Image 1 (cartoon, rainbow, N blue to C red):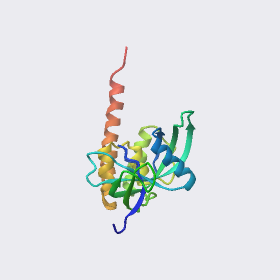
Image 2 (image 1 turned 90 degrees about the horizontal axis):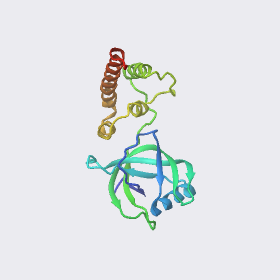
Image 3 (image 1 turned 60 degrees about the horizontal axis):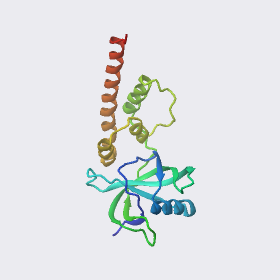
Image 4 (image 1 turned 180 degrees about the horizontal axis):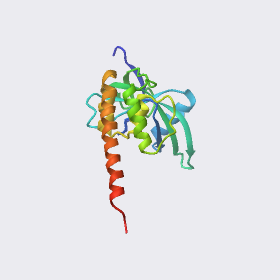
Length: 195
């Protein structure tokens, strides 16, 4: 398959975005083997978005960020970081001679540091101020905006499939919606007092 590379895969019903840190609990023997390989060989792996929503067969390219805890049972709590979005050509039961899955994938080569448009940035800063969050990492990327909005899986999926020129307007509509909800909740707190 031209343009595709074979990498280890970890099918899960999550869809991390570029720059996002994700905690995972590793307990299956095959994924313990994957964790060992990630540590020893410093390789990347894919989290395939295992969902009926995923008609486009996308996933996230991940790297091991840190191991939080090793349990006496051999289980581990780890943090992984998303580096890119991928498209899956084919998923295989095993990767090379390993017990964990693999897949032929093509990388989207997403710019995870892409800045939001000025209108989106201003609306997002105001939204965060309403939530009383004033200290934010700078610069704010379009993906950190999306993460902060806690998009559900359907919205994450839509957002990641959009062309770059449509991502900002998508997030503007979500910031506007969540800002309105926040203001309504705030108004309700002012109107109703518990006895």
